Length: 129
Image 1 (cartoon, rainbow, N blue to C red):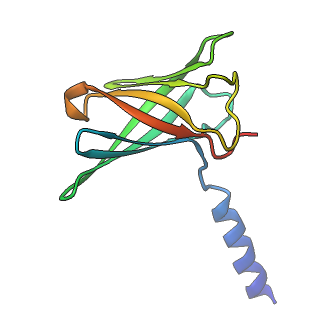
Image 2 (image 1 turned 90 degrees about the vertical axis):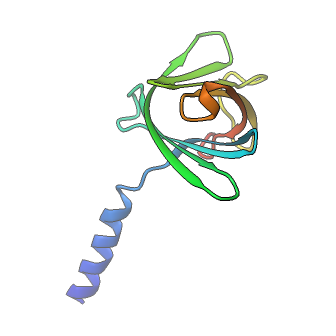
């Protein structure tokens, strides 16, 4: 019984460190497929987020990691994620807050993708209300 309790408690404590994605985006830039994840911050009041960008073609797959901050402008439905060599502008229109089940458009400029040319992405907030 003690062993079972120890196993259950260890599984619960490990799942507590799991990170949830705030934003998930997909798109293309030329022949490259782009998948992007922005993790929810801890604590939730933090403006800094971690970003993982997966860029793949038929032959290769590359992963890039960024630390970005969040900028929201009151009254506008635009969300900006900015960091060194990374800028993504996400348009929430017609909503002011992200909603579950909605897909939003975004523009990504990253020094790692096509020499910094803009890429169009489609994003969703999997944990939005």
